[in-house]
Length: 322
Image 1 (cartoon, rainbow, N blue to C red):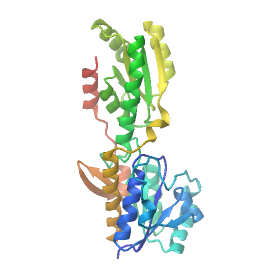
Image 2: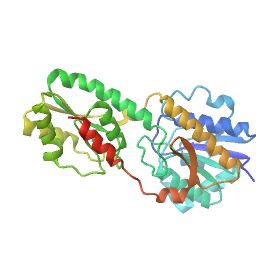
Image 3: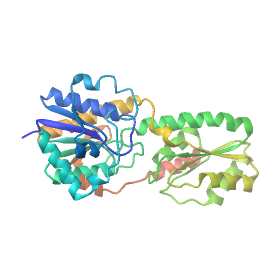
Image 4: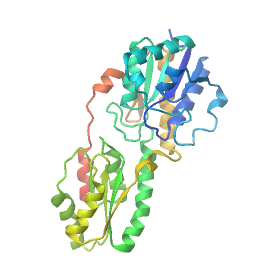
């Protein structure tokens, strides 16, 4: 028997497109005759009873905004067995028999635990890092890529004017996808990612000198957050080459801003699919994109999947960027 009353929450780091997913969950649920609650500030909202009943107008004019209208927060209390049971009891008190959790791997572990406590949950992947193994695409990734590309295009203007080397750090602690694809898009001389160890001499200095020999006079190097040491890298390049070098850390600017069309559409499709699963009496699932198809996996199976890095794209970026 399918869910009659559902809730939706956003958890972990915010990502552009989360609002489109919330909107899709609310309106899909209402169209199926469900009562829908919005949970404020992630799992904290379940623990504290910070919920509000949603109607069609509750999600008007939120899709074009970045961040999350439901807000988000970390919840150490929910990470305990007692916290999970307290959240499950709150759901029962409100008559909630299904929850859609929009977030990353940590949020999905919480969804699995809440399902184990008797409240069926569906995970929707929302994180700019694109670091969830079961899905080809996570909500927010495309917007973050376009923001990073635009910022680096602007940095390039001053880099060209001064014959400089700009070392730009983008987000991605465990995952180099933002760095890799942004590096290709901006023509970075070198892209450094956590998945592949780099050699400073071979991957940085030798490539700068090869580019110099072809007449190039300004250089962009993209570094993933997980590689780090961006300031030190810039200082070392200047010391070894004599080229004026500057470090820029883009930081949380990549998390904000209006979501792209792709993020809005994918989020809408994923949100609808999540509600459809709950309507069909299913829980403990993660919504995912494979190719252009929206599919779903068991949460435990999804969390155990190994993440792969596109090493061919990494080789392509090196070939195209001299």
